[in-house]
Length: 412
Image: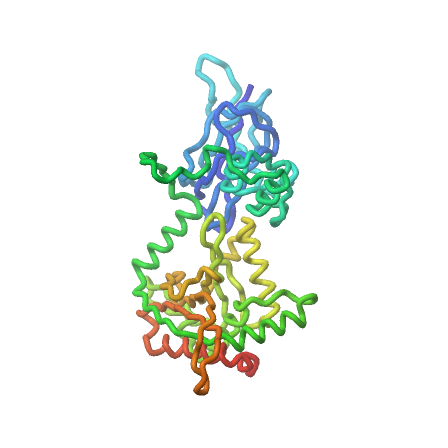
């Protein structure tokens, strides 16, 4: 028998460490070639580590939530026969007791590659947990996400087809009127830890200034409906977001100080000609901000298609590191859950974020008459160190002007 050592891989781009976010095996488990062993994450990109060998798990390199350096031991697998170290590696010490002659363990290069979805269903930990609660075998659930990833909606469809969506008794809500003493500890790991760290740094280092303005979106919503009705079969469906992105592109030409990144350690503000819009996207793993690059060069439908692609990649766990970096200003929207006002946190090192609240129909005075109008608030935050209050207000008023008179969005 021999020992196969798998080390934390170098996932590229100068990465020095990665966080262990999930184990799919435990000591004593038999593993097959290409079976998923662990999920590791860096900069919000999660990679599944498959096994290059057949064998039995001897030990794990750490608990979930631990950060491991590149090259550190990730897992040990006992394999049949003698294991030869890959070329360029020197044999490590034997994993067996000194009194037993055993081959030296080999240090394995981790095979980072796409895994055939048919080998193992692709699903997030929350989907796997809910599948267990619903007593569903993921191998029997067709995935509709990117690369066949199984989504929560796929579980709903499978449960409905089976004739029941009732979870196992242990997952049901506790009845009211009964005292409870149970507790649940939830480790803050993976994407959630990254989000917490980034939000803490943003609030600690940036003096936020939030400005809220009411926008009449009746006309732009009417235009959106007309364009969708005319081009629904040929082009991507338009939400309000492409119009807001277009308004941002036009407004930052007069207010370049909000389309910027601030290196507060070097004391340098870099104002960008390109408008790389971060689009805050809620996923099962937490909030991600994929980047709509060069929004200034896209039309409404190009923006809509790219936003849809990025959101799908983020929610399907396929977004790349490059797609999550380099934004110069962010738009954040919770759609129908957006509330009437919010205080969005700036995506550091940016200096501005535009928060979109929900649209409501309200009676408004127009020309001396009361009429129904579609109203929406923009709640926008700015880094008060580099964006003066008056400039922030004027920038938001510029957005308001474009959105309330949507024809101006297409006039250069």
